[in-house]
Length: 247
Image 1 (cartoon, helix red, strand yellow):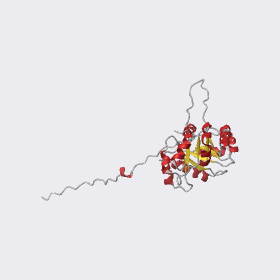
Image 2 (tube, one colour):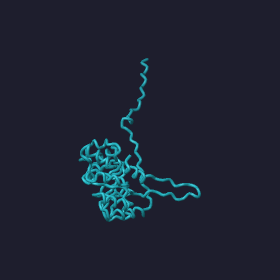
Image 3 (cartoon, helix red, strand yellow):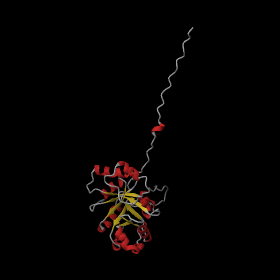
Image 4 (cartoon, one colour):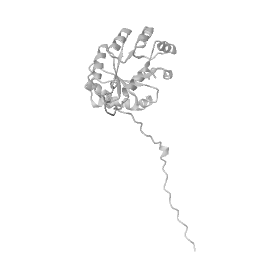
């Protein structure tokens, strides 16, 4: 399991309230992760110092940094998937933790990569069937674009459509102007991480998330599906009339 997947599980885990006298308050994980998109090692380290839980780099930046990424304490991933097994091997040697895939462009063999987390960025025009099928793949999360505030109910429904059909947690690219109520709405729709491309926003996001009360995150429950063949229509038995006595 990737380190990113472990962080996501920690955020989604609901801790039971301790019972009994003399039990102190239990520390809980923040309701959201902070993920920073950076372009070089210095930005990555600054983002981590400001509270980023994970780092995302472009493929070109990750290949150029190479061994310099080994010292990062937070898990890091690549936004554009590598195009060859050799590229993937070099990135894994440098400490690659996860990949962000685009279904229309990424090589399907990347789904077989062991020890690497996978995040998929579905097309905005993806159909309901395509989103449901993403839930059948070995993915850790989906990457979505969060709408700018003020949020409308319709926008939240569109976001919830993705997380509901995929049955996967979401990482959301958030706009610069964010505040705790806005982030709380995203959490209620299945978002587990706020992704920012602005280094100056990392600390503000961390403070906003820390001030949020623990939310009641939705739990996905599989719906029972009864195959049509199991409900076969059996015609009722018609009692046969006894033949009349000819005598």
